Amino acid sequence: MLKRLWSYSEKIFNLSQHLLDLGNIGFTRRNSEPFITAILFIAMFMRFKSFNYLEPFMHRNSLVWKRLLNTDYLPSIDTISRKIAKSDIDGLRQMDRIFNHKLRRNKVFNIDEASWGLIVATVNNHETFSSRKRCCNRCKRRRVKVKGEWVYEYYHAYVICQLVLVKVPAFVDMEPIYPGEGELTAAKRLIKRVLKEQGRMIDVFTFDALYLDSKLLNMLEEKKKYWIAVLKQENRDAYKEIERLIPEVDPIELEISKRDITLYDMHDLVGWDGLENTFRAVVSDEEWYEWKMNSEGKKEKVLKTSHWRWLTNIPSTYKPEIIYRLGHGRWEEEERGFNDVASNCHFDHAYRHHPTALLAMLWIIAITFNLSHAFFERNLKAEIKKSEIPNRSQLVSTMIETFILLTDCILSVSPGFEKPP
Image (cartoon, rainbow, N blue to C red):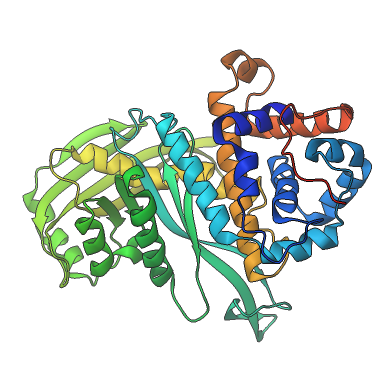
């Protein structure tokens, strides 16, 4: 199955050529960046959780690795760890952008009923790991209380843009949050770059309440992009204006996913200085029942409620139900996005604590996540999904089993890296 996945990546995306196009600055002929990165791509396709896990796997199956990479030499794990600190981050970002463009051209992001003809992306903060013992010059730090004592905790955080409500929830871009700056500052850099390099791909950006910043929203308005943001702060003028208008708006009653929903739709609101255009607000009150175990060990229905307020510039031609679904889609897709890569692809693991190495590994994990997702959705036949490989976790297990059992497995299209002297 690894052979099929790599062949698919070669045929559709020309993966080997893009690996050969990496900067290769600070590397050697024997341990070139394309060669080292190819090893990491194969490892991340199989979701190896650490270099300590990869090392014995390479040693036990060295013949297979050499055949896969068309070489008679394999670097040590220490060499790989040192070299990724010199990775070409811009090259990896460019590779991801080209692959996403190819997916878009191949209509992998074709829209279904979930998003009503709009390609939706979410922008959110993601913290990878934390440590109280190790730090680098790009670590952020905070004070935490441990056993009654205040200590410094060091961590890395990133702002990540990812597509939602599509079959392949591809990672679009990511930006580190540097020491001394907040999430919003890094998000503005990321969104500005996304609008410049991949502006045609995204129609709607969905945000948390933090992103209700007039400069950011005006930038999206200027580029004719839609936005949806959650409103939480009760001290905002927009919150107070919505509170005043709710009694004057006719409620819309409907049922979605076994939930009783009441929507309030308000147009042409003006809520804070600096926002150049008026905006729209959609309020939802939701009720539903969940089965819970009571103190007597019996199941009983428990009434659940929730209240949401979304601000958006999406025009009234789109029904409030669409705003509701797009707003909730940001959270429903987290299971296929951040939670998936963190839980199953080891996105939060520090393969090496170095700012460049950390970001390089995040990009490699993100690209392999996109490619394997596209392969699973577009290349595997429905019969195979139903009987043999029902999910992507089983796909990974099949690749590892094949790698171990079929020691004479050779990729039909090898990366073609130059053999060392």
